[in-house]
Image (cartoon, rainbow, N blue to C red):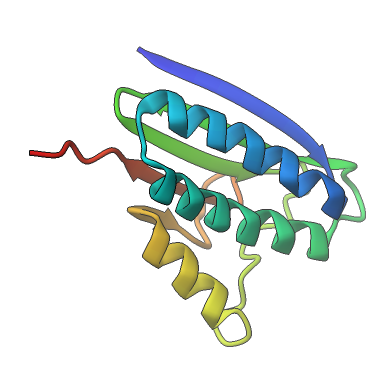
Length: 127
């Protein structure tokens, strides 16, 4: 059973913190510790900030979709503006890409799917 939570945000920097608060609450509910929650919040901030900086000429907002499945949280970013596909330039955004890849377990950049980016984190059980 999967729980799906959709958050629709305008292209405004002041709402990036809303996405951070939502992911913090969801990750806490799954059982992630505070350090991992902070990592997820940093990754989500990197993506949301980039989306906001690019903006859109045809859409008023973008969506952050959180899918909770067992001990995994998957976060997908999408927009009706289909021109927002590969938002991270591999040369200019190398640091941001490296940060996101280091903090999340699985990251899909520049996909051919109907979303901008997807990333996930799985709760590792302590032995």
